[in-house]
Image (cartoon, rainbow, N blue to C red; front, side, top):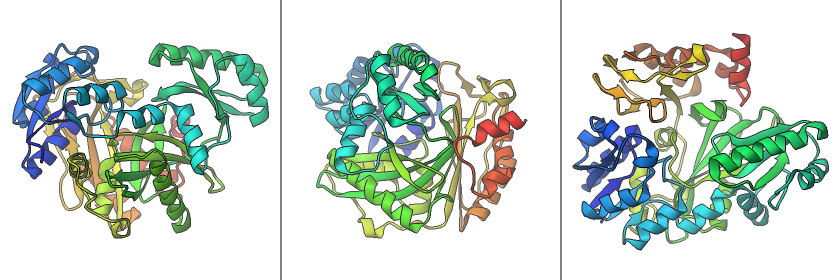
Length: 448
């Protein structure tokens, strides 16, 4: 068993991991920037150490400082959470070089799945359905336009090293392809230091459905059902739920099977997510693999009765999965709303500041993952997500009603939030009827 784990993250995911460590009798170390010195995760951990100034590049993205902190504090392992260094293969290798266990997949796997064009090629060879498109990288617009003609317009131009919506452009005709390709390539080079692109058929307003998988070091891989993440803005998810209202048992079974196949194709270990897009005809395609725990992992925990963070730690310690595939059953319905400190009426502008009053919802089947407390100053240097409200109920209709009740009860005074906007979504007929696709938020914003 690990004696001590350093959490290379902040906010609610750091709190979540610290609590899992406590439940396992493992000591925890919090790292923090000077801006985060009064954060809840710093107060909750057994030990804490400052790793730099506020900006992430000087603190939570500083690999050498984090590894040095872990060694100085006597940690056995590092849990990266999500974001920051969680999918950085170089960081994994640095941990291993210094005798620290990285709680996540191997560096080579992160490399192979982090490059989107390489991931597509791997999935094609494994027999997992992939959106029609290029198998090899594309480096210039001249070659790209020839390939786009073969695929058929409209096409999506994507950065091989991309994520978060950066380096992505849609070309609807040959006339606009060169411009869109060049713009996407510039964005990719600026954001990721890589101008390698790939092209795929653009599927208009699909559903975004992902499968949570967990794998150990003994070849065991289990799929823990799906999450529907279609409600998103600028490729950033707002609401996630499980099970998906868009698929039936046959599609669910096939998706779970292909997710396991994808994980085995790269000898995956630890927690991961296989992301699919689903077209209006019910055909699904592999989109990408996230080689880390997801923001929305709590939705899966609610419907499966598992603790994915504890399972991550156990697998990293060399233990086999604590469950078999046939033991995974989705019970009831879970929904998560991401609460952000932002102003929807001002193009979702971030709203940092001091939380002067806070009341969190509670009750049977209500869970709030957060690092907020009254008096806490939300910094401007980091992501605006400040809480995740998750509910569980016997069916989808009851879960929607429970979430409305939870959001009604939630009070955050001192900063602006998207609480009212989330409540608006939960009252919208498209969402309530299970018809919301990835174009849903764009449509309701235009209507408003």
